[in-house]
Image (cartoon, rainbow, N blue to C red; front, side, top):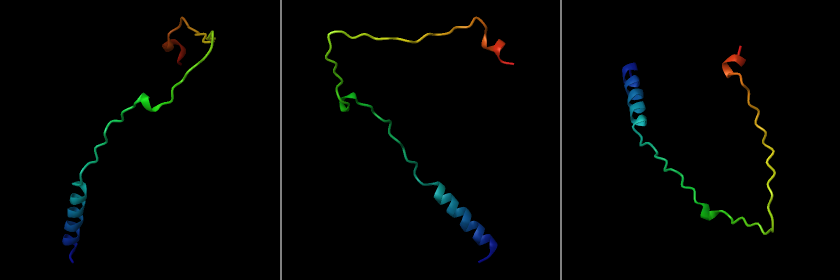
Length: 65
């Protein structure tokens, strides 16, 4: 086999391989019906929120050197 034939065969194989069908992935559907139910039996529920946001008067551009 000559070099031209080998190159032609390689190019042909690459072309055929690239023409394979593309796998299409369907979007995932999330259903809450599959999850367990969450129940709380209590007279009183209290939430303790400890979030304390710290705000700065300076812009972020002033803080970056």
